[in-house]
Length: 270
Picture (cartoon, helix red, strand yellow):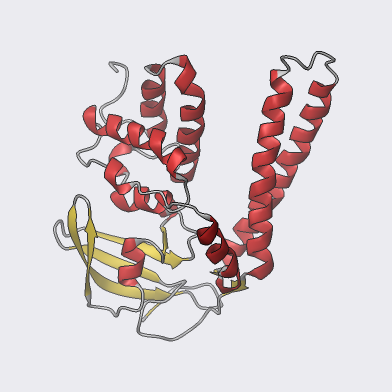
């Protein structure tokens, strides 16, 4: 702890947190925290992580994945790296056969920005490349005739299974996604618009681009319209004040401006 700076990055705090865990727990916990850090950005300073960041990430993780992350977020608060208790904001969605069926049936309603569509295509290509590498690793590991304790083969099989699931999900999304029309003229905040907000308690301004949950990444300013804040902003006009009820209290934001990205790529105010 003594070597960590007063305003450390997520990576630095994660290393300290993992070093105190028993070896039996460290593996799975490290995997989930690594995903969380990659999503937010490894260079992000802990004090810059907001409840919106955590809530948006929670939309895409399972309850089992959320458990180690909540321990990590609790550690961040206890060690004084953040004045906000972020753990309650991580609410993983429960998955059931009914939920899966609803999600699959809603695929035709996916609308992505052109940039988001391009990013998902790149992610898909990267995953397929990783899958090819894993298959090579499996072939090498399978050459070992002693299958009783072939840990490399078992690890490669598990990684391939994970990659196959993610590839299938991305292919389904891309096959049925629609790229939103740019250059719209509207006075209300819509998918694809960038909304400038003012925090009424601090006076600070910040902005988010409203996107589908599959594009969401608050670290790059992309807010899911399915998140509490995204839902509150959607279809609102410039000058309106929105309220978001969170475990830590009620947050009030005023919409200072709504920016639309036209086809030529320049942002125009409403």
